Length: 431
Ligand SMILES: Cc1ncc(COP(=O)(O)O)c(C=O)c1O
Image (cartoon, rainbow, N blue to C red; front, side, top):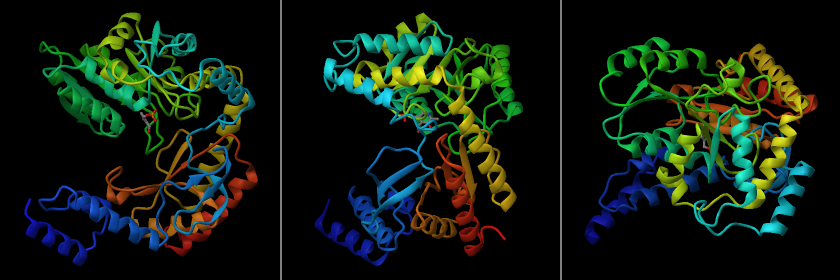
C-alpha cells in the first residue's frame, strides 16, 4: 500500500460522503480500512441528523415499557417497546430472575469451558432433555446461540456435492451455514411450492444429499411457512427437512410449540431449530431431532465443539421460562389479542402490513427517506420500533418492524396507532 494511494483515498472520502452503509461496504481503494472510515463518516452524519436508530441503550427490563437513552441526543426517557422479540415479556418474570440468581450462586456466572469438556452442568443436560420433549423429539443439543446452531448444524450435515434448497426469505444465519458448508445452493421464491417442487424434481435421486430449509415464521415478514406442503414435497422426493422455528417458539401453535404444533406435524421434522433469544428472552440455540442426529452434531458441529457453553444462569432462567410457557395459555392469548388488534387497526388506517400471521408486524414504507423521517418522529414521541432496509429487504420494501408483546396495554397500542396515523399522513405514507 503506497502512501500516495492512502492520501488520495482519504481525499475521495472527504469529497464524496457515502449515501448509505451499503455504499460504505463497496468503497473502492487499496486500503482495507477505507470502508471503515467511510462508515464512520456516514454514522456521524446520521447521528447529527437524529437518524441513528441502532443500539439505543436500554436502562430497565426489556418489557412493554422501557427506559432508553437516545444516542442522537443523549436524552433518557420511557419508551413504548415494539422492538423486542421477548414476545411474552418473561425476561423480568420473578421466577425466571430468581432461577438465574440461584444458579449464579450455586454454579457461578459462567462455565469457563466448551460443552464437550467441562461446560455442561446438570442444568444444561436438563434443558436439552426439556427442549427435546418440547419439540416431541428424541434429543436436543444446546448451542451458544441460534446463529451458531444454524451455522454449526447445516455445515455439519452438508458436503460439497450435496444440495441445499432455501426459501428465499430464510434467515441470514441459514445462508451463512450453507456458504460455510460449501454445498450447492438453490433458492425457491418465497413460499412458492411449485418452484420448490421444480427444484426437487430436477435434483433429487442423483446420488447426493438434499436438505430443504425453511423458517417457520419469517423474521422480516412475520408470515408462516406452509410447513405441511414443504414436508410433503421433501418426503416425496427423499430430501431431509430443517425448520428454523426461532420466532414461532411460544407464539405459534395451540401449545406455543411452534409451526409443527400448528400443523399437527410434531416429531416429523428431521431437524428443528429453536432459539432461547426471542420469546424466551435469553440466549442459546437448540437443535432437536433424532438421538443419532444429536450425537452426531455434538462432534461435527464446529460452533458447538469449538465455542463456550451457555452461562448456567441463562440455562436456569430458560428452564423457569419453559415452566411458565408450558402452563400458561393466558399470556399467549394476551399476545394474540394485541397482535390482532394492532394489525387490524393498522390495515384499517391504510398501512401495508403484508401477510403477517405472527407477533412480527412489518409496516412497509418503500421509500428510505420517508421511512427515516417517520421513525424519527415516532422515536421522538416515545415509541421504539426497528428500522429495516436494504439489503435485509429489497429497497422498495423497506419498513418498520414491530414486535408485539403480551404486556402491551390497550392504552399503549392506541397511543402508538394515533401517532402512526399522524406521522404516516405527515410523511405521505398513508392518505
Ligand atoms: C429466523 C432466525 N433464525 C435464527 C436467528 C438467530 O438466533 P439467535 O439470536 O439465537 O442467534 C434469528 C435471530 O435473529 C432469526 O430471526
